[in-house]
Image 1 (cartoon, one colour):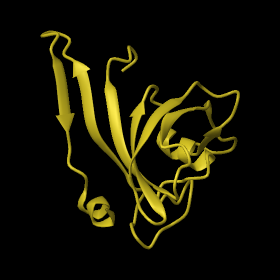
Image 2 (cartoon, rainbow, N blue to C red):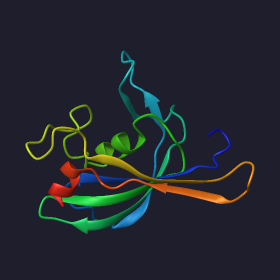
Image 3 (cartoon, one colour):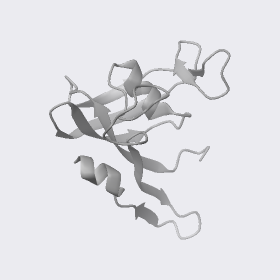
Image 4 (cartoon, helix red, strand yellow):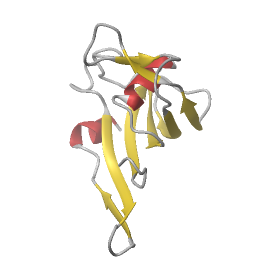
Length: 135
């Protein structure tokens, strides 16, 4: 993990419609003062980069694919909340939702080069039913 040889891909459902349909959110993340859980965007934080692409738009929310260049705690949640599009159902960084009982975030693909065989390994996991129902 420290050598950054893993590529982690996520699908999330965010509130609203993004103006820019793909890009990178490059904002540093730090631990929020007085909290052991919550993080926030702060210039004194660690470098944090999330590459995103809108997969599908709905009336009031969007399905977004995210690739992490860094792996900070709550990175996707913090980044999208900071730009005004929190994850659907994220009660820590956004708003509760009557459409889903948790944050709409799913790690759907991980890939890496196997340290012994040197062959690329890739594993995927289907979208959970609650997120499929939203789509």
